[in-house]
Amino acid sequence: MKKNLLFIAATLIVFAGPRSWGNVFVDPEDGYLDASRWLLEHSGFLPVPIIITEPAVGFGGGLALIFMDKSSEAARPGHFAPPTIKGVAAFATDNGSAGGAGFYVRNWDKDRWRYMGALGTAGMNLNFYGSGGFPGSEDLKMEYSLDGFFLLQDLRHRLGESNWFLGARYMYSDLKATFEGGNLPLPETENRNGGLAVLINYDSRDNTLSPLTGLQGELRYYMFSENLGGNLNYNLSAADIQGFWKWNENWGGAARLLTRWTDGSAPFYAKPYIDLRGIAKQRYQGDVAGSAELELRWRPQPRWQYSVFGGGGKASTDTDLFESSESAGTYGAGLRYLMARLVGFQMGFDVARGPEETVFYIQAGSAWF
Image 1 (cartoon, rainbow, N blue to C red):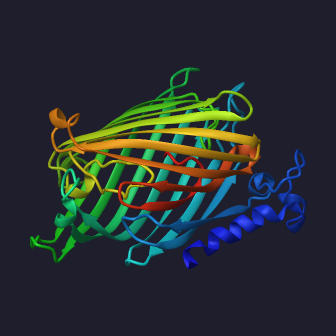
Image 2: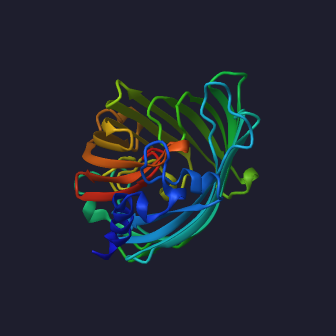
Image 3: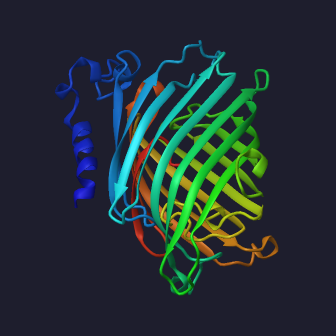
């Protein structure tokens, strides 16, 4: 019950209405509770409760403090100007997992350049089910801990006045994996993963935080190498396509297609997995994994959005056997409130049912990042 107290408090704040907060938290356009002026004009922060019911790590919680600033550059005519976002976050769960991170996102030169960076540390207690992980894999479950730190640097440049970007991403992590018991005694392993990705991105979304219309598509090819700071050599590829539609003022939809595949000596914790709401992270892993998700949205008025969604995915150790491998499906429903209208930032929650359990998620911005 305690895991829901922060979310209940946040919900009560939303329903309490603007009189509780003073004019800075009232949107003069519609009179609703809104954090836009607090974030953009008063250098304020938005506390985002982290309510964790992720099956991979158990129940827990934490807090993220998000700071937003207006873009220092004028927007491209007819386009949304993403705000500068800074923040810190920390969490802990009842299975002993804990972590924290800082992040920074900004654009400049009229959104011709985009940058994202993050630095964090974590100690995670997880389960490994082997590759594939479908029926019968419960008997193979092995508990392990993953401790260390990570660094992410992402820079991309717009091609002319188009919606296309070219960029690069560097990822580094220093992680120690320790298995706790299990049927097969496995030695402790410590790996450094240093990888550089080249990427091509198409982004016509009306908003980068909580999009209602547009298309986002990205292809990434990672090269992890000893020459890039690691001690392993492997490659990882990813294709992520997201579409958002607004059919009229009340109805819309969204869809996502995601696939990842790897080759070389990738560590078991870096192998692709089915990524869907309702399924624990890394529950179904393989050398190749893919998922698809559809969402139907209803907005009875501009501040509130209700949704239903469903999806399915597969994971396999062999690309040639991917189509014939077992599949896993999910479905669920969600609610969003437009917390900062001027930057299009929504907050809310999703409840999703997977093959094994029902999962509750707090969402800040899009569920697909």
